[in-house]
Image (cartoon, rainbow, N blue to C red):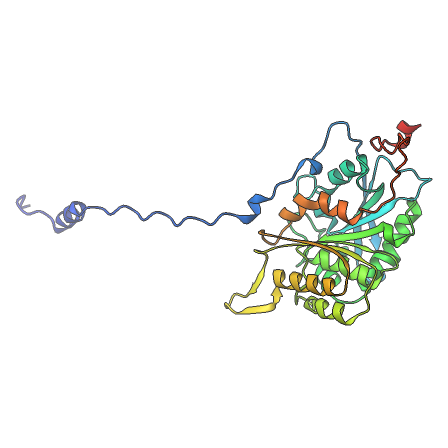
Length: 336
Protein backbone atom coordinates (compact mmCIF):
# COMPACT_ATOMS: atom_id res chain seq x y z
CA UNK A 1 0.00 0.00 0.00
CA UNK A 2 1.35 3.46 -0.91
CA UNK A 3 1.41 5.36 2.42
CA UNK A 4 1.90 8.69 0.61
CA UNK A 5 -1.62 8.72 -0.72
CA UNK A 6 -4.33 10.07 1.61
CA UNK A 7 -7.72 8.46 1.01
CA UNK A 8 -10.32 10.80 -0.52
CA UNK A 9 -12.79 10.13 2.30
CA UNK A 10 -10.32 11.43 4.88
CA UNK A 11 -9.64 14.54 2.81
CA UNK A 12 -13.37 15.20 2.48
CA UNK A 13 -13.90 14.80 6.20
CA UNK A 14 -11.02 17.13 6.94
CA UNK A 15 -12.43 19.74 4.57
CA UNK A 16 -15.82 19.57 6.27
CA UNK A 17 -14.30 19.87 9.74
CA UNK A 18 -12.35 22.89 8.63
CA UNK A 19 -15.53 24.80 7.73
CA UNK A 20 -16.75 26.87 10.71
CA UNK A 21 -19.93 25.35 12.14
CA UNK A 22 -22.88 27.73 12.23
CA UNK A 23 -24.70 27.76 15.58
CA UNK A 24 -28.10 26.09 15.48
CA UNK A 25 -30.95 28.52 15.05
CA UNK A 26 -32.80 29.06 18.33
CA UNK A 27 -36.13 27.32 18.56
CA UNK A 28 -39.06 29.58 17.88
CA UNK A 29 -40.61 30.66 21.18
CA UNK A 30 -43.84 28.90 21.95
CA UNK A 31 -46.84 31.16 22.57
CA UNK A 32 -48.02 31.10 26.17
CA UNK A 33 -50.82 28.70 27.00
CA UNK A 34 -53.83 30.94 27.68
CA UNK A 35 -55.37 28.32 29.95
CA UNK A 36 -52.41 28.64 32.34
CA UNK A 37 -53.90 31.90 33.63
CA UNK A 38 -56.88 30.09 35.18
CA UNK A 39 -56.36 28.28 38.44
CA UNK A 40 -58.68 26.99 41.11
CA UNK A 41 -59.22 29.29 44.06
CA UNK A 42 -59.89 28.46 47.72
CA UNK A 43 -63.64 28.00 47.16
CA UNK A 44 -62.87 25.06 44.86
CA UNK A 45 -60.62 23.31 47.37
CA UNK A 46 -61.30 21.58 50.69
CA UNK A 47 -61.42 23.95 53.66
CA UNK A 48 -60.89 23.14 57.30
CA UNK A 49 -64.04 23.25 59.36
CA UNK A 50 -66.42 22.94 56.40
CA UNK A 51 -68.85 20.05 56.60
CA UNK A 52 -68.48 17.76 53.60
CA UNK A 53 -71.38 16.49 51.59
CA UNK A 54 -71.67 12.87 50.52
CA UNK A 55 -71.36 11.81 46.87
CA UNK A 56 -73.45 8.67 46.50
CA UNK A 57 -73.53 6.22 43.61
CA UNK A 58 -73.02 5.31 40.88
CA UNK A 59 -76.61 4.53 40.00
CA UNK A 60 -77.97 3.33 36.66
CA UNK A 61 -81.05 4.81 35.02
CA UNK A 62 -82.59 2.96 32.03
CA UNK A 63 -83.87 5.34 29.36
CA UNK A 64 -87.18 5.32 27.54
CA UNK A 65 -86.36 8.47 25.60
CA UNK A 66 -83.40 6.66 24.03
CA UNK A 67 -84.41 2.98 24.09
CA UNK A 68 -81.57 0.58 24.75
CA UNK A 69 -79.43 3.12 26.57
CA UNK A 70 -78.82 3.87 30.23
CA UNK A 71 -77.45 6.81 32.19
CA UNK A 72 -75.03 6.56 35.09
CA UNK A 73 -75.38 9.23 37.77
CA UNK A 74 -74.15 10.20 41.22
CA UNK A 75 -75.95 12.24 43.88
CA UNK A 76 -74.29 14.88 46.05
CA UNK A 77 -76.11 15.23 49.37
CA UNK A 78 -74.94 18.21 51.42
CA UNK A 79 -74.19 17.75 55.10
CA UNK A 80 -76.96 20.29 55.79
CA UNK A 81 -79.66 18.30 54.00
CA UNK A 82 -82.77 17.77 56.12
CA UNK A 83 -85.33 15.35 54.63
CA UNK A 84 -88.09 17.41 56.22
CA UNK A 85 -87.10 20.53 54.27
CA UNK A 86 -87.28 20.71 50.43
CA UNK A 87 -83.80 21.16 48.94
CA UNK A 88 -82.84 23.05 45.82
CA UNK A 89 -81.41 21.05 42.92
CA UNK A 90 -78.47 21.44 40.55
CA UNK A 91 -77.78 18.96 37.75
CA UNK A 92 -74.42 18.72 35.98
CA UNK A 93 -74.17 17.01 32.59
CA UNK A 94 -70.95 15.07 31.90
CA UNK A 95 -71.10 14.29 35.59
CA UNK A 96 -67.86 12.34 35.68
CA UNK A 97 -65.94 15.54 34.84
CA UNK A 98 -67.75 17.86 37.26
CA UNK A 99 -67.38 15.53 40.24
CA UNK A 100 -63.74 14.64 39.48
CA UNK A 101 -61.84 15.76 42.58
CA UNK A 102 -58.58 15.96 40.62
CA UNK A 103 -60.14 17.85 37.70
CA UNK A 104 -60.68 21.44 36.62
CA UNK A 105 -64.03 21.96 38.39
CA UNK A 106 -64.32 19.87 41.60
CA UNK A 107 -67.94 20.84 42.06
CA UNK A 108 -68.46 18.98 45.38
CA UNK A 109 -65.88 21.25 47.04
CA UNK A 110 -67.60 24.33 45.61
CA UNK A 111 -70.97 23.17 46.89
CA UNK A 112 -69.57 22.38 50.34
CA UNK A 113 -67.95 25.80 50.71
CA UNK A 114 -70.79 27.94 49.35
CA UNK A 115 -73.53 26.12 51.25
CA UNK A 116 -71.48 26.41 54.45
CA UNK A 117 -71.41 30.21 54.12
CA UNK A 118 -75.05 30.46 53.00
CA UNK A 119 -73.98 31.89 49.64
CA UNK A 120 -76.18 29.36 47.86
CA UNK A 121 -79.13 27.44 49.29
CA UNK A 122 -78.90 23.92 50.61
CA UNK A 123 -79.04 21.87 47.42
CA UNK A 124 -78.83 18.32 46.22
CA UNK A 125 -76.70 17.97 43.08
CA UNK A 126 -76.80 15.24 40.45
CA UNK A 127 -73.82 14.38 38.25
CA UNK A 128 -75.19 12.52 35.24
CA UNK A 129 -73.21 10.95 32.41
CA UNK A 130 -74.28 10.75 28.77
CA UNK A 131 -76.32 7.71 27.84
CA UNK A 132 -74.69 4.55 26.57
CA UNK A 133 -75.66 0.99 25.72
CA UNK A 134 -74.61 -1.69 28.21
CA UNK A 135 -71.83 -2.73 25.82
CA UNK A 136 -70.36 0.76 25.48
CA UNK A 137 -67.70 2.07 27.88
CA UNK A 138 -68.56 4.52 30.64
CA UNK A 139 -67.35 8.07 29.91
CA UNK A 140 -64.34 9.11 31.97
CA UNK A 141 -62.67 12.46 32.76
CA UNK A 142 -60.23 11.64 29.95
CA UNK A 143 -62.79 10.43 27.38
CA UNK A 144 -66.20 12.06 27.60
CA UNK A 145 -67.73 9.61 25.16
CA UNK A 146 -68.17 11.57 21.92
CA UNK A 147 -67.08 8.58 19.83
CA UNK A 148 -68.24 5.77 22.07
CA UNK A 149 -71.58 6.77 23.64
CA UNK A 150 -74.86 8.50 22.85
CA UNK A 151 -73.42 11.89 23.88
CA UNK A 152 -73.43 13.61 20.44
CA UNK A 153 -77.06 12.72 19.79
CA UNK A 154 -78.36 13.52 23.26
CA UNK A 155 -76.47 16.72 23.91
CA UNK A 156 -76.29 18.44 20.51
CA UNK A 157 -79.70 17.77 19.00
CA UNK A 158 -82.30 20.53 19.29
CA UNK A 159 -85.28 18.47 20.44
CA UNK A 160 -86.91 17.53 23.73
CA UNK A 161 -85.55 14.00 24.09
CA UNK A 162 -82.78 14.82 26.53
CA UNK A 163 -85.20 17.03 28.46
CA UNK A 164 -87.34 13.91 28.79
CA UNK A 165 -84.35 12.06 30.28
CA UNK A 166 -83.92 14.74 32.92
CA UNK A 167 -87.54 15.62 33.67
CA UNK A 168 -89.40 12.37 33.07
CA UNK A 169 -86.75 9.80 34.00
CA UNK A 170 -84.16 11.30 36.34
CA UNK A 171 -86.43 13.55 38.41
CA UNK A 172 -88.79 10.76 39.55
CA UNK A 173 -85.80 8.65 40.58
CA UNK A 174 -84.24 11.51 42.56
CA UNK A 175 -87.51 12.65 44.09
CA UNK A 176 -88.20 9.13 45.35
CA UNK A 177 -85.17 9.32 47.65
CA UNK A 178 -84.80 13.04 48.34
CA UNK A 179 -87.10 15.94 49.17
CA UNK A 180 -86.56 18.16 46.12
CA UNK A 181 -88.25 21.56 45.81
CA UNK A 182 -90.95 21.59 43.15
CA UNK A 183 -90.47 25.30 42.39
CA UNK A 184 -88.60 25.54 39.02
CA UNK A 185 -86.82 28.65 40.32
CA UNK A 186 -85.02 26.32 42.70
CA UNK A 187 -83.76 24.00 39.99
CA UNK A 188 -80.69 24.53 37.82
CA UNK A 189 -78.77 22.58 35.21
CA UNK A 190 -75.33 23.09 33.71
CA UNK A 191 -72.55 21.61 31.68
CA UNK A 192 -69.50 22.19 29.54
CA UNK A 193 -69.21 22.14 25.75
CA UNK A 194 -71.97 19.88 24.39
CA UNK A 195 -73.15 19.35 27.95
CA UNK A 196 -73.76 23.11 28.16
CA UNK A 197 -76.00 23.32 25.10
CA UNK A 198 -77.84 20.28 26.44
CA UNK A 199 -78.42 22.13 29.72
CA UNK A 200 -79.77 25.14 27.83
CA UNK A 201 -82.05 22.88 25.79
CA UNK A 202 -83.51 21.29 28.94
CA UNK A 203 -84.43 24.70 30.39
CA UNK A 204 -85.60 25.97 26.99
CA UNK A 205 -87.87 22.97 26.47
CA UNK A 206 -89.03 22.66 30.09
CA UNK A 207 -88.92 26.10 31.77
CA UNK A 208 -91.65 25.00 34.15
CA UNK A 209 -89.16 22.47 35.54
CA UNK A 210 -85.75 24.20 35.30
CA UNK A 211 -84.97 27.91 35.19
CA UNK A 212 -81.24 28.26 35.86
CA UNK A 213 -78.58 27.43 33.23
CA UNK A 214 -74.81 27.29 33.69
CA UNK A 215 -72.83 27.14 30.43
CA UNK A 216 -69.06 26.61 30.17
CA UNK A 217 -67.67 26.86 26.58
CA UNK A 218 -71.11 25.91 25.30
CA UNK A 219 -71.29 24.19 21.91
CA UNK A 220 -73.91 26.49 20.39
CA UNK A 221 -72.45 25.55 17.03
CA UNK A 222 -73.40 23.56 13.99
CA UNK A 223 -72.67 20.12 15.35
CA UNK A 224 -76.35 19.31 14.98
CA UNK A 225 -77.81 22.74 14.35
CA UNK A 226 -76.96 24.46 17.65
CA UNK A 227 -75.92 27.68 15.88
CA UNK A 228 -79.62 28.27 15.24
CA UNK A 229 -80.31 29.09 18.89
CA UNK A 230 -79.54 32.81 18.54
CA UNK A 231 -82.21 33.16 15.84
CA UNK A 232 -84.60 30.88 17.71
CA UNK A 233 -84.30 33.05 20.82
CA UNK A 234 -85.01 36.20 18.82
CA UNK A 235 -88.10 34.70 17.19
CA UNK A 236 -89.54 33.07 20.31
CA UNK A 237 -91.50 34.40 23.23
CA UNK A 238 -89.24 35.18 26.17
CA UNK A 239 -88.96 32.32 28.64
CA UNK A 240 -88.46 32.66 32.42
CA UNK A 241 -84.91 31.30 32.54
CA UNK A 242 -81.65 32.72 33.93
CA UNK A 243 -78.38 32.02 32.10
CA UNK A 244 -74.66 32.43 32.82
CA UNK A 245 -72.46 31.98 29.72
CA UNK A 246 -68.67 31.57 29.75
CA UNK A 247 -66.33 31.17 26.79
CA UNK A 248 -62.77 31.96 25.71
CA UNK A 249 -61.40 33.81 22.73
CA UNK A 250 -59.16 30.83 21.95
CA UNK A 251 -62.01 28.34 21.89
CA UNK A 252 -62.47 26.38 18.65
CA UNK A 253 -62.82 29.13 16.05
CA UNK A 254 -64.28 27.37 13.05
CA UNK A 255 -61.23 26.88 10.83
CA UNK A 256 -61.19 23.35 9.43
CA UNK A 257 -58.29 21.18 8.37
CA UNK A 258 -58.61 22.56 4.86
CA UNK A 259 -58.05 26.08 6.18
CA UNK A 260 -61.57 27.24 5.42
CA UNK A 261 -63.49 29.23 7.99
CA UNK A 262 -67.05 28.27 8.89
CA UNK A 263 -68.70 30.73 11.24
CA UNK A 264 -71.35 28.21 12.22
CA UNK A 265 -68.51 26.17 13.77
CA UNK A 266 -66.94 29.11 15.60
CA UNK A 267 -67.59 28.44 19.29
CA UNK A 268 -66.70 31.94 20.50
CA UNK A 269 -68.68 33.72 17.80
CA UNK A 270 -71.77 31.61 18.42
CA UNK A 271 -71.60 32.17 22.18
CA UNK A 272 -71.42 35.91 21.56
CA UNK A 273 -74.35 35.70 19.11
CA UNK A 274 -76.43 33.85 21.69
CA UNK A 275 -75.52 36.42 24.34
CA UNK A 276 -76.61 39.22 22.02
CA UNK A 277 -79.93 37.52 21.27
CA UNK A 278 -80.64 36.85 24.94
CA UNK A 279 -79.72 40.45 25.82
CA UNK A 280 -82.02 41.86 23.15
CA UNK A 281 -84.91 39.81 24.53
CA UNK A 282 -84.27 40.99 28.07
CA UNK A 283 -83.23 37.69 29.63
CA UNK A 284 -81.75 37.49 33.11
CA UNK A 285 -78.25 37.01 31.75
CA UNK A 286 -74.64 37.12 32.85
CA UNK A 287 -71.62 36.29 30.73
CA UNK A 288 -67.84 36.50 30.70
CA UNK A 289 -65.35 36.11 27.84
CA UNK A 290 -61.86 34.98 28.78
CA UNK A 291 -58.71 34.15 26.86
CA UNK A 292 -58.87 30.39 27.24
CA UNK A 293 -59.25 27.43 24.96
CA UNK A 294 -61.99 24.81 24.68
CA UNK A 295 -62.02 23.27 28.12
CA UNK A 296 -62.99 23.79 31.74
CA UNK A 297 -60.02 25.85 32.97
CA UNK A 298 -61.74 29.24 33.20
CA UNK A 299 -65.15 27.80 33.89
CA UNK A 300 -63.78 25.73 36.75
CA UNK A 301 -61.93 28.70 38.20
CA UNK A 302 -65.07 30.86 38.24
CA UNK A 303 -67.64 28.16 39.06
CA UNK A 304 -68.11 29.57 42.59
CA UNK A 305 -68.99 32.99 41.14
CA UNK A 306 -71.27 31.47 38.52
CA UNK A 307 -73.15 29.56 41.22
CA UNK A 308 -73.41 32.60 43.48
CA UNK A 309 -74.90 34.65 40.65
CA UNK A 310 -77.35 32.01 39.48
CA UNK A 311 -78.63 31.44 43.01
CA UNK A 312 -78.26 35.01 44.27
CA UNK A 313 -81.90 35.48 45.23
CA UNK A 314 -82.40 32.53 47.55
CA UNK A 315 -84.27 33.62 50.71
CA UNK A 316 -82.38 35.37 53.50
CA UNK A 317 -83.36 36.71 56.90
CA UNK A 318 -82.63 40.35 57.72
CA UNK A 319 -83.63 39.99 61.35
CA UNK A 320 -80.74 41.41 63.37
CA UNK A 321 -81.55 38.94 66.16
CA UNK A 322 -81.48 35.91 63.86
CA UNK A 323 -78.31 34.28 65.15
CA UNK A 324 -78.78 31.21 62.97
CA UNK A 325 -78.81 33.26 59.77
CA UNK A 326 -75.59 34.99 60.82
CA UNK A 327 -73.77 31.72 61.56
CA UNK A 328 -72.23 29.15 59.30
CA UNK A 329 -74.70 26.68 57.85
CA UNK A 330 -74.31 23.74 60.20
CA UNK A 331 -75.63 20.23 59.59
CA UNK A 332 -79.06 19.63 61.22
CA UNK A 333 -77.64 17.57 64.09
CA UNK A 334 -75.33 20.45 65.08
CA UNK A 335 -78.21 22.91 65.13
CA UNK A 336 -80.13 20.60 67.41
